[in-house]
Image (tube, rainbow, N blue to C red):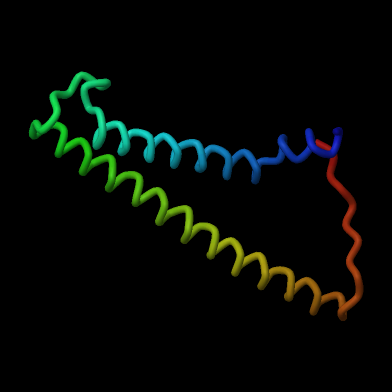
Length: 101
């Protein structure tokens, strides 16, 4: 249980959780605007519905694109940093001390 709570406190988990929440909110906004815009006080078939739906789609798609690019770039840079650290130690197993915060 303690290990699980430590994982929830990590900044990496918090960043991905926030991005996931915003992505879910964007998807929910798109679905509401497309299927039942009267929940938001917008008349169905109006110009505002089309415009807001378009804006919500663009923002959600942009966020999804950012998440994908961010994941790929962090993966690539993390892998190269690992290989550099491994090369500097001569292939030995590197034991790092955990920094207490």
